[in-house]
Image 1 (cartoon, rainbow, N blue to C red):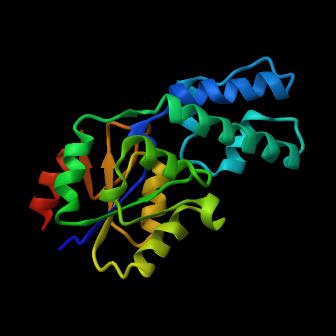
Image 2 (cartoon, rainbow, N blue to C red):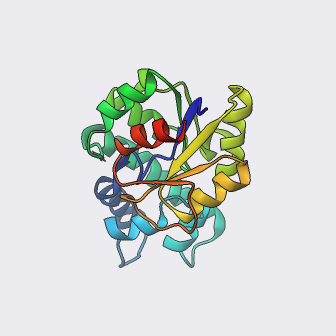
Length: 210
């Protein structure tokens, strides 16, 4: 019987790409000579990757150290912007979390910078629903390792991971955790253990599974 749910964040719990694109473009305009700008749709294809990989794609031609410096500035600016202009929550998310948190322990594991998950929890007021969270900004490790760390640290016996991209699916498999596909998110996957079309579908899916 499922005892816990570990969620991805972007494309699974909310969509912050409009606000993040605006924040990153401010940094690009102020700190570089690049003529191109990121878009919300472009970020949906990048989110879920490690931050240094995203930096390499956006800041091609810059040194590795400069890429990381610029990415750090982007992440600092996005968190300032998100405090004023939060991402869009997916339909019925809070009601779903209220129901799920009464039966399961809830967690977040996302490939994001330190402070991003905390910003999400602060602007939504959802902290009480979640037991813990991890990201590469906290540990220096990729998603699979962080999923496994949550499972081990909290002694979870039957967790599932909910995400929206092939990277999420691969990380979940590597961590040895069943994967549920949030098909309303940013990406596509190959062979999930379950599929939901909205957050609230998770309630029925897990009840049927258990």
